[in-house]
Length: 307
Image (cartoon, rainbow, N blue to C red; front, side, top):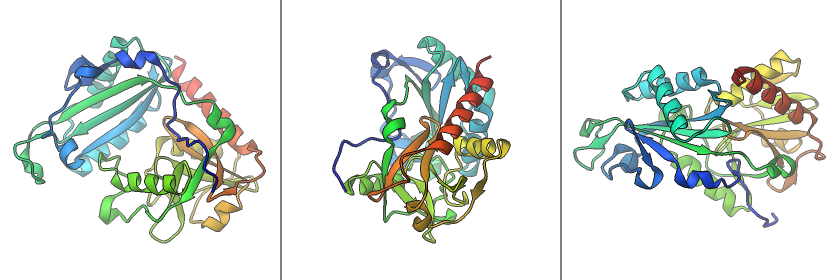
């Protein structure tokens, strides 16, 4: 595989305003240089926490209810009380945005851990001083060149596992599985990893949900072994509403290599085209279906956040 400049689906244009942002830490707004959590925090010590990525457009948090449904469901599943209601989360997000003079093209990483531990050991009952809640808001816009160049994926040995090992539907702080996959892809000369499910079917990337286009049909995985992304769900809904055949199904690398188009989805990058998988170019470079989906998604964002 050719060694060229590496990209990721989270590449963003540098914005100097981010050097002076205020960050929400347990109810307080502090300068980024002063935003700190304890080394005894369960998130730092064990990856014991949940997070959510959100985007602010035109003063509105896109698909806020869907993100909160996933966030609170994940917290409940691991008996983690975030100590805030959905309305209180929204108020904190808006206060943090206002303190930073942010209105659009903003990305937030909302993080909640089980809190500070009494002793540096695993048992959740030792997390007696919590939860810890952090909200990092940045001026963040995806780089334009990714839409023309696309990203390069490499299939990696690391898989998305069974729900009884670590359920991939959790947006947990423990992301080592995905970090290992990303390292494996980088070592193979690619930008990001294409991960298979436990049965060898194409599943997801280390950071995003994955779609292919074959003969005008949009395919994605069953969703059984991947994060059920909010953007993923919106793309499926938009396809169904606009007469684009879409299927959630098992398929192999054979179908992925022979796809006419491929793209990944995520809250930050929306839809990013895939240029190649394992060194094999995807299609001819024409991305008619991908572009149509991107425009439908842009229209949806505008319709739901323009006030």
